[in-house]
Image 1 (cartoon, rainbow, N blue to C red):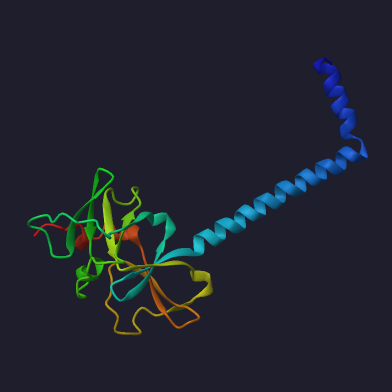
Image 2: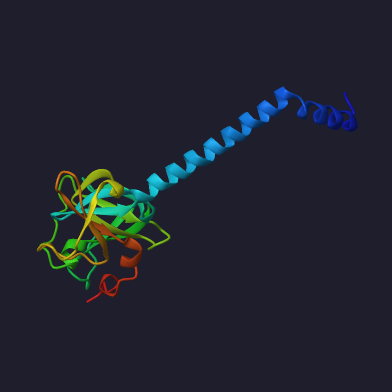
Length: 194
């Protein structure tokens, strides 16, 4: 086995060889490429949103604001006495009780039904522990960088709390971007009891 001193000397000698310099250049290029790919991936993640329907409205939610989506088919919500009509009750999710709210009803729209196809979107635990929203459909992922920002005052849509922005996609669909971090602190949303 070579001594450490011999290894250092051999490494220094190899570093000065043309093949070692080209290997270092290749490694440097690969490291740079990985950094650029990660930056691009981070940029695309920051513009991607979860697309859902809340009542009749198409909504976009930052992925970092969500924990999971749970289908409500066959699941029952346990009503909680003396709560507001938009607070639908508690969902037993693997032994944890999650409060489910109907954001459309909170905004003054007709209450959503909890039939087939409805889901609960559970907020990220960093925003609000054990809290979720009723959504009528999961519509996949959308990229807001491919949409056009529009005014929030341009139509007669129900104004959901904490709408961050409004966008129109290439197909003409209008999307409300929700800020669930702000919703978790919204005064009306926090007033569950009557």
